[in-house]
Image 1 (cartoon, rainbow, N blue to C red):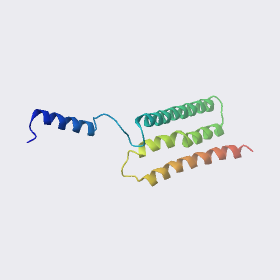
Image 2 (image 1 turned 180 degrees about the horizontal axis):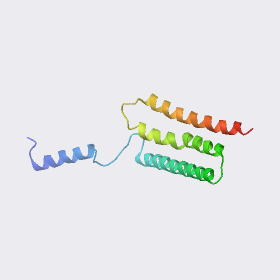
Image 3 (image 1 turned 180 degrees about the vertical axis):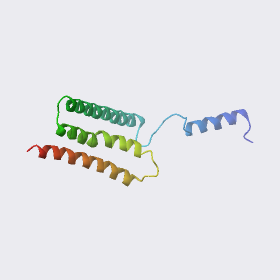
Image 4 (image 1 turned 45 degrees about the vertical axis):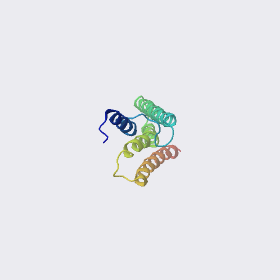
Length: 123
């Protein structure tokens, strides 16, 4: 019978290590250090794209025209929105990966079209 105290301790230790509160010895996608580096890079890229969007919005408010506003919206759709969508949609199990990437690509395409519209509209 496994009711002895020493055996219970070993079983509990094995369950904790293999469960969600155990030590992280590996992660999906590679070593924990690599995953942390990729996640930190994603956070930094998101912060920088938000900073860029704020700067463009401030430029628009201080006298920029409609083109500057559309350029800002296009850049946000090209940079910030796809990163946020990837993070949010990857946590929705009902949406398949192909649809997640299609939604992200649609955001990027719309952003590019807005930017191209501003560039070619100034001629």
